Length: 159
Image (cartoon, rainbow, N blue to C red):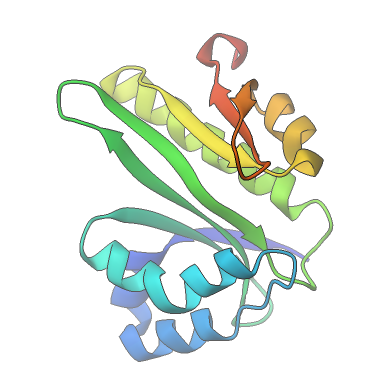
């Protein structure tokens, strides 16, 4: 199963808002209901309002989302920072898709750093994803009260 990574806003422009809403609404992720809810109800309005950028992993054989990640801006204009706010794969997606999405997000931040300089990048993840984040260049930066692990991108390890 192969996929292509598409920014949500681009999908809405190319396919239309209603087709995009239908695509998002059909995404199922029993393992992360919060991410599923975000994709169903908040992702498109947040994209339109420039509050976040969501990248969809679209199945190249069928018109469906296999997974996604959402990036938000933190900090301010003088000290920008970014966070991977959501990252999830569909229930029937390939087992390694989350790992591949983490790698795609890391590559996105690496390209951004080449253009505009490095800035802090963080993510909060479940324990089962720590190894995937570490393999993509993140380091552990602590544990949050909700039990998720705070990860920080270490650009030096992206050679």
